[in-house]
Image 1 (cartoon, one colour):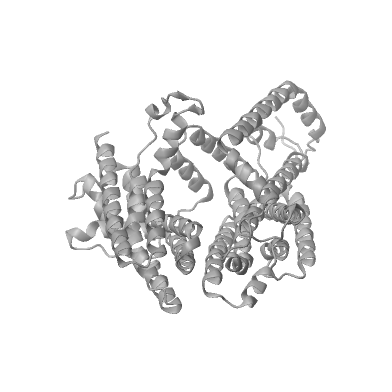
Image 2: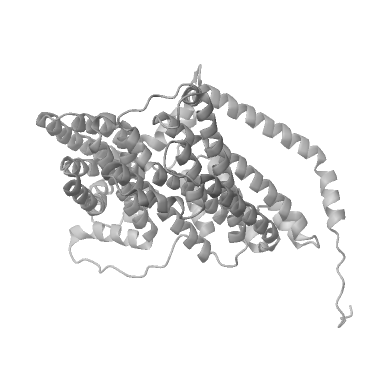
Length: 552
């Protein structure tokens, strides 16, 4: 073999390679098309059987809009901030997806073999990006029905089918453009050599989303100035997307056609930019994400939510460095609280998210207390946000539930760790939710809000602990029995995942609604007693799950 100092020209085999692949995949493409058609049929059947009521509710909302109620002016004031929060949720979803999967994705064989061949990367990746942008826009347009239906159910949007359909069309157009904009931004994000910038961007948008949701609740509860909504509607693409629905719902957004035009121009610009940058995505990133998709697909097929989380964190690198340490305690009873605080310090994003969810929960709770006779939806949202906050603070319990051997050296029985793990989340929620609740109670004069937050915290922590010690999905759960609506194993598995929030949020909605709807001290006293009993029962259930984990 002889070495040469001259460069060797590598022939461009793009057309030949892609032509050969098309001919080899022709039969497989037909099988894939049949497979897609089958799953679309299954999806349609599931929607018809299990979500037919939702489709019927959407159709009814368009044809027979409910009349305005006592809460309608409050919903209208909260519409700018609330719709901005939903728009930010769309952007967060797309950008978060790009952090581990991306709009530019190739299969594992393509990543392992085709990327190293002399094939032009643009011919390989740009069609995939264009398909992803189109799919994202269509999915966003369908998601646009959500804000439209919410506005119509709140008694907004005018009377008759014509105004309702117009509101839905504008909402679908705005949400579709926003999703396409997010896909273009995601392609630009994926082409960057460093993952630190995309993470910071996604976190900032997610923080703004939760803040906007909390601001919507505050706007409805304490009548913030109208200038706040105007600033939000012109704060960026998320505000531009919200202006059309706000205007057609009866709000103040006179320049919404201009805002929609700006959104369309920004979406087209970012999609074109993303199409150009799709070819610059590093091959190493494509290979890593192809492996991650394989791992996550296997975990999803096995219904293993925690392995899905592990694969996601391994792909995006959410385990940050600890900036500070907590001094080891000298007293025995402080060991578990110290370790739980250390677990939160090693996952600071959980603490941040729990703080934001706590603020949003208190805001929705204040809205429920202000309008007690129409508080079911607000209470459900407040308790859901509160549960998310409690679950984020139970990091130490989750780690012990994932690995029972982690605590074998501690001077405590494993099943008693449940009670110790409740200390840090309860105290943290008392600060994160109790402080804002006290301030709102003083400002609005609804002192009952503070008492309701106090009795709700242990219940939500108990529900989070029940889910923390659920263990791995057992094979016997797939052994159900046949019913007219399908096999019962699906219900069993769903209950296994949601039993904690179901048993904590469901009863508390009823208890809190009865409490804020009644002026009698007896009702409030019963709410306190039953909430304490519910929290104790959830703790016992979590302890039983922990004992069962230890014995297996």
